[in-house]
Image 1 (cartoon, helix red, strand yellow):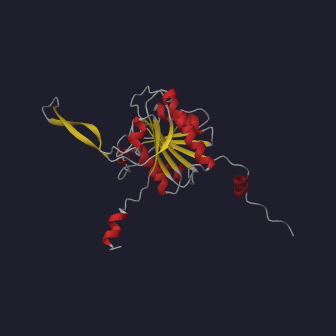
Image 2: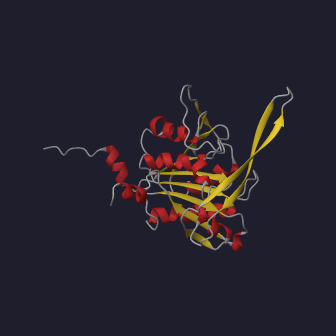
Image 3: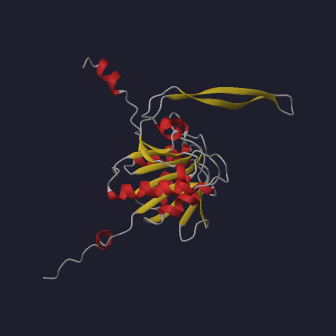
Length: 267
């Protein structure tokens, strides 16, 4: 009796197949931060990039409805398949899974963002929303952000942190079934104290809308604001970042307030 031939697909998974790593961001596919992330991630697996063609900071979990999305192949990273998408960071993840990879990747890494996504910033962040969309699809995901808004930011320390986090994920030192918000301080490498697991600080933005007049005489407003940390305890991401640590906060998309729910149910 002839033996049944083993599935090629299953065999490929057995022979130490490298993980498929999806990379995206919200600063756009040409941002230096995503290039820095790709450089590190490709040491650990096969990288595919699907990122917005233009900056999408502050887009949160927005998706494109009512107009078509464009997806174009680009040659921006050496030996890495890459695409630019006309939509939001969340659109990028959705399209990557459905039309580019045709399956769920083993990991999704978003960033490295130019600027902080610590504390309440996680709500507004396109970087973290892309990672969250991956998590909704049960894909282990991490959003990386460097607290430097400059286009010419030095990503050396950030790459060190990214390497450390990916290594810990692959070794199981950080649970793979999770969604993580990682922020890196803007400090010299010799002053870096390490990666610190934290909770999200209680903070908020105090907005100020500057009123101006355009050339046609019509009024418009320009958003500015100040970040106010309301949480002075030492177990938060803001505290860690202010004291030389990179912060890693496990987050989730379930917004249920379980304490209030228990009270409503009389438990």
